[in-house]
Amino acid sequence: MKKLFFFSGISLIILISCSANYGSYPTRTTYPTGSGSTTASTEREYSELIKTYKPETADVLNDLLNADSPSNLKTSISVENQSRCNMVLTVSGNGFFKKIPIAAGKVGYTMVPKNQNYRLSGMLCNASYQSTKFISTSYAIKISN
Image (cartoon, rainbow, N blue to C red):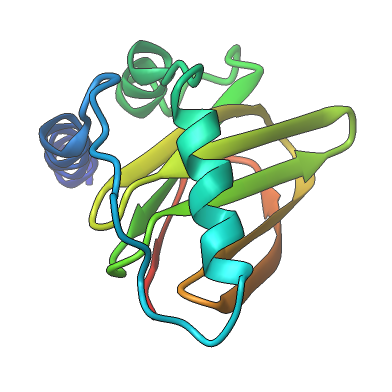
């Protein structure tokens, strides 16, 4: 069981590190076709946020490697954007609020305090994504349109 967990953790780390751009996210010069200004406003928000966003790569990788440690007060959330559109994911909880820019086809992640409910929301190619999750250990999701 420990070998399976270890192998899964290492595989996830490799996938995350391969898809991270370390601050050089591509920006779009054209907006995806859509039926309104929602996509354009999401693209503007993404473009502004990506200029100052600092990914928490080291903290997330440490969390994935030390997931069994009860002394860790934080855990990771990772979101894979499998769509053709950039998105801004908002993560909010009790005393926590963060916006994460996630490029099309890339993975975004953050560290959050453990054992709390979080609301994950964002726009993806003119479709609204909203979910509420209780996060107690590392959590990964894939979003597509």
